[in-house]
Image (cartoon, rainbow, N blue to C red):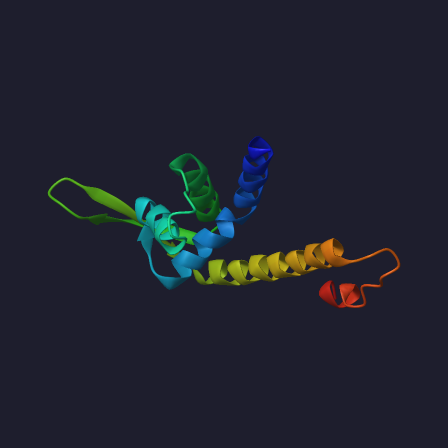
Length: 127
């Protein structure tokens, strides 16, 4: 049972990482480690984001023009790469968030519905 729970949590996490990263970058420019630590902190250490999951998403968002990156020197030799949310990224984040909320609403309805129920708001969600 615990193995199934881990699989489900991993799948749900993969589906929301992009949205969470965009949300954080909407608040402030951040570097990779800072992003992962901020998610961990805000979740009371229940959400851990590994670099192997995060960086491919950051690279894809950069290639799409939703975020940009810049280097900032933080020590004698250390340079951090900060990520910045572009205006196109804000619009994208809002569209992803809207789609996420609509989908969650549909899933919640389906989980709570009974045979014969009519979901009247379904057509409103996809208008």
